[in-house]
Image 1 (cartoon, helix red, strand yellow):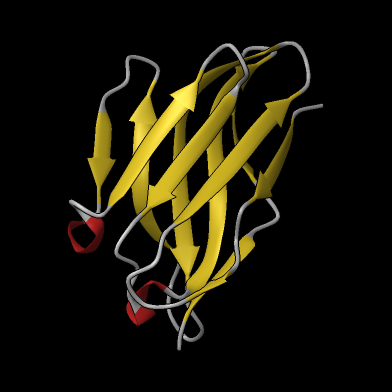
Image 2 (cartoon, one colour):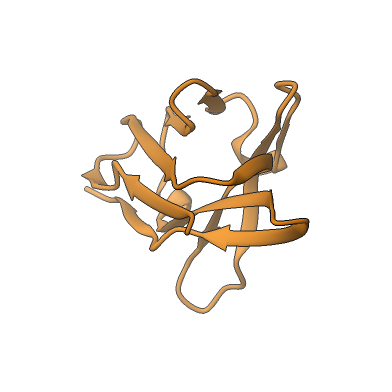
Length: 119
């Protein structure tokens, strides 16, 4: 069974920084794609950033230049460095992993971590 464990959410002032982590554990799987989504109250869940096995990244326009997604393949861990945080970044952030397990593509989600940007 593949498990995703997120950490790093917190309350931070505008202009501050946070780093989210997503550790993937288990056996018998290969990761195809990793990404971070977020969902604010009353809003749909949106893709914030994604990263391929080859290291290609993609960002939603609102975070370009402020957020950086990365991964440590040896540790099966993904990170989201968030700088210059704004109140509009307040949301629950979810780790997403698309993986191949027993010839089946699976989309897995973390439990979510709360990021609150406020004075």
